[in-house]
Length: 254
Image (cartoon, rainbow, N blue to C red; front, top):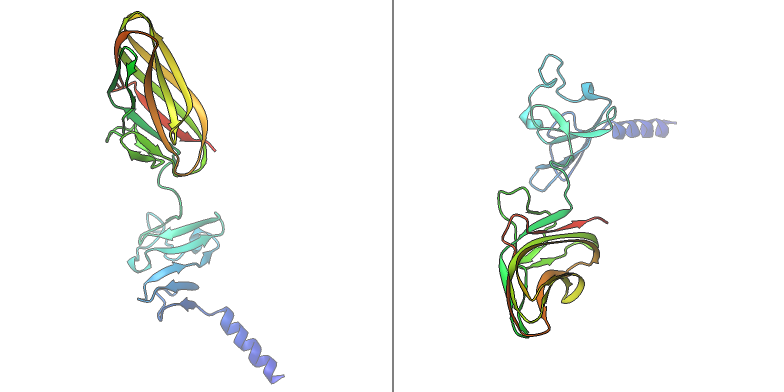
């Protein structure tokens, strides 16, 4: 009988004890479980409160409802009433683990100016140069896919929507018309393209737009290549991009 009583007392002491792992001294009398690193700095504190009035430092006379205590800064508690984990910043309690900004799953780049041309059947080609202008909310690389001046390198496998807009202008003089092509190239292979025809004599501006969906894998390199097809003798030259309308965006949708 004596042994049973001693065991019961020992169990009660364990259930009511404050537990510290990795250190020697608790940083707060409110702590139930505290993890510390080898220098004694607190790493994780996980007590719980029935509601906001049960949180440490609650004081209804304060404007924010809590007293200030810098020694308790970074303390975490679970508020059972709201079902949120809260963090104490030294002055008040706030929701913890909330993202500071809206999650974004897209990157949009500006298409900088570049040119290609033809002399008879000898035609040049080029990848469109891309940039992310600073201090411009229209252009951002939230997907962190910029690899070089003309290449996106995919960091996450998934289904991507690719939206493409480019303003280009130029001249063609000859006996035949020309076809201007813009292709989406993945690891050197054309996956989608669009074409525009120019008459045998033309001086025009064109706005080309396309919207498509592609499955892209990790480390896929994506370029946007422009070429000219010419079936006969002609002289032609075109300049692409470098305008506010010229941009390309990738959005991860799945």
